[in-house]
Image (cartoon, rainbow over all chains, first blue to last red):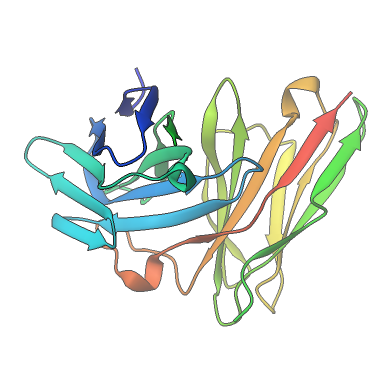
Length: 109
Length: 120
């Protein structure tokens, strides 16, 4: 079983919809990351968080340390948000990064 | 400030050959990590370097090795290539590596565009 589980694996939405991607993890962590990967491979770090909530523009990330769960929300989704979103954690004991399998988001106009 | 650069961007090799990939971190960043991404296994941590020393290593065979130079640039090498080594190899840099149990914004990683390796 993967230490980091994401859901859903694939998500299709209409432009303007509110989107939620979930991430659950089973190890003790120092931090959790949300990454965005566009076709072609380049990865952009969206958020690094260890508690509470962070917001950048239309993106919101939350984490519940007790429940070992994080969510990434996208408000007013747009076709340019289409990408693979990856959840990753730093294990507390050694700082190694563990990755979820990713959620492929397609936003249709 | 220029981002993380990786060379080459694409590479085709045959089984049994060896390959060297290069990563130049953001200016001022001293920590470099390498990751392998395949359709079957997803993203996996390879190793992390700081001050020319390997700090962490993932669960990969000894055919995978790396090094870091005094200017923080890093290279990774894969010897005796296998078909399963075909992957996107990503490097990421940060100002400093994180301490186990404690991370700060200085540890935030910035990823390069990757090198897509195809082994035939």
